[in-house]
Length: 571
Image 1 (cartoon, rainbow, N blue to C red):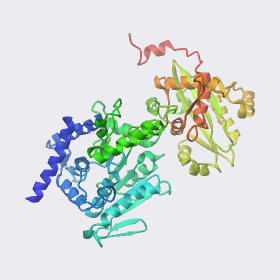
Image 2: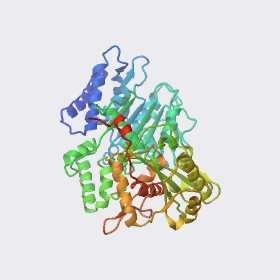
Image 3: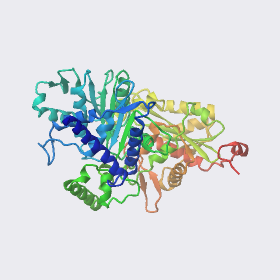
């Protein structure tokens, strides 16, 4: 009877939390309200015979009791037993209680949780991992995957610190070679990192954690874990992160997709993914302390936490360069890398079109302009293509890097150039310097198949190859690399993207370069993307802007027959 009452009390707490958000008793962002709306919709359907899921509230009882064995390891509550908040109970109820009627396995194979820092992310993850590892009847393989070894070890060490203090667990696990092994069922918990080139390739994970996924420059870790989970009965991939300043990372693309899953006005559905996004809404006043709970479901509920947020905000207001960090880390808002960042990547993402056709096919009948950015011979060299027709621009690039230097560049830049090679966006040339013969051949092959109206180049380091290409019949035009000369095409290219006049094909190398690009400005407010002020490499962007500097002056004649027959025409 006592267990039944305890289970009912926990269920009431979860339902009360959802009800308080729905009735605005707890202030919440629109995505949390959508999450609650989705939760209620799921609960209303579980009694329907054709609905494939049911709710097992006993799992919440077990999870809460398991969590209650542990003590806080840090902060003012260190040494006290953990008491899960209503927010944490709600997450656990969704992740563990929804099950399939046909098998009894967990419904959700993936959970995405985005919340501001210092809201007990590592603590909650540690409880989830030990709960599965120790109480499962199967031999679980659990991996903590992060970009850096230090980040992976944060959650691993939290698991170890929690279980080490529980007398009942003494002798029931071992910890050696940075791996926890449960004696009873052979389950393991292990930390991996991309930095150490340990991705879990060849493993068979049942539970995988991607902690602070916003720091991952590629989705290799996630894809490796997902592939290994295919044979598992109840796999769980948990991504838990705070927002960041780099909109080119895979996490931001996932964030957009998961937001669409929650949005009732979108057709995107996925019954196997649980989504919880706690953030400030666009337009919220960051100075209004009542808004802080939207991103801080724990920190903003007690005075010490609110005081810490006040202090962080005050410092950000006194040192404006810290404001963007405050908004991302403490208010969980995705922002561009810097105030002078060239591109809002959400606008760039909106210009993507899906296609499996070759680039040359996609620009047939278009006016084509090319641009070169021949940087230092040991670095990235790029060719940009801008095709014009009927007021639209189709954009792509191809880059080159010396084969004997690119592994060194991967290590130094912390960028997976090898994935760009595999995707066909980057060519490795022989030797330690870029062999411009490869660049010349690529341009000539493209010219012969598609015809280039003009090729823009910088005479400082491309005069020789420009002369050779001109001798082969390619029309070349010098593009002076001064801020006065590049300001108009730089601004116009961005405006074309923001107004939806640009189309691209999802080139990750070009997107990464756009995310790196930072503007420099003179006293007359002329701008250009600056290599010295930009984070990492921007050569593909520079090449595209060189092409756009000529493409923007194309006469852009419109085929009236095509326009009238197109989707955009109406009376």
